[in-house]
Image (cartoon, rainbow, N blue to C red):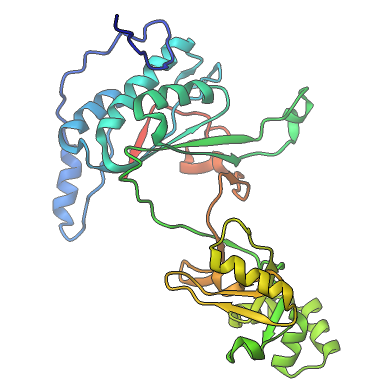
Length: 352
């Protein structure tokens, strides 16, 4: 007797009904072609398509299947509202079918190392995730990013219960094994946990003297402590600039994960605890060297510095919580006069 193993999937009325899509040919606007010929020195490598996007995606498949590196979609949220240009209150199973058909084509368009980003709110998030998992594979789901796009003010704050102030970005890789995204960093204010300074940093670590940051600033700039404190209080940007310029010597102490480090590091941690007045140095071939003091690791501010838009700043990798986006005046974007948060959405795709 053979037992058939079925995969976990979401089902709905009409799921097995697939649209019959014939290959389409995209026709270029003759007026645009004439404009291109008139300015032949320009490079036109973008494409704006007017029409039903499901048919457009099918037409793009002939030329771009397996070639698109990044796709962003902003489908209707199915809020139940009726907007000027479309009805955002589809019957739930119909919405699932429409999004499934488009995800199928988008999956074919993506390159093996491509990325899909879907913008959605919490109304259909759970169901969308289940459908996307089925098409892209749950193992290829990269992240669910929550971003703040409003505040608990106005009429929303009057409603009982929690006030919705967030939207979501659902990220998938076509094939996580091939996926290699660029390393991105977000600029941050100075990390004030790094509040100590290493005097004689250019000498061997047995000559180092670790002092409070303000003392290191005063010593380096040849100022009295009172003067240094006054400058730091009245013009903190001066101290911020000093930290960036002397990032090799600005430090903090942190307790390392004893079980998460190598045997050599554990032995050195133990030795530094036994000799608390001495700094221990552990060289490493493929990583930054370790320095330990009183069982704690010395972390240098220079490791936090990143170059963002040509400027060296303290930078952290982006997290799955984005709370630093400004949604003010988004409703004026493009002069379309849509509602705040760009709620007048359609099934449209932007491919890069």
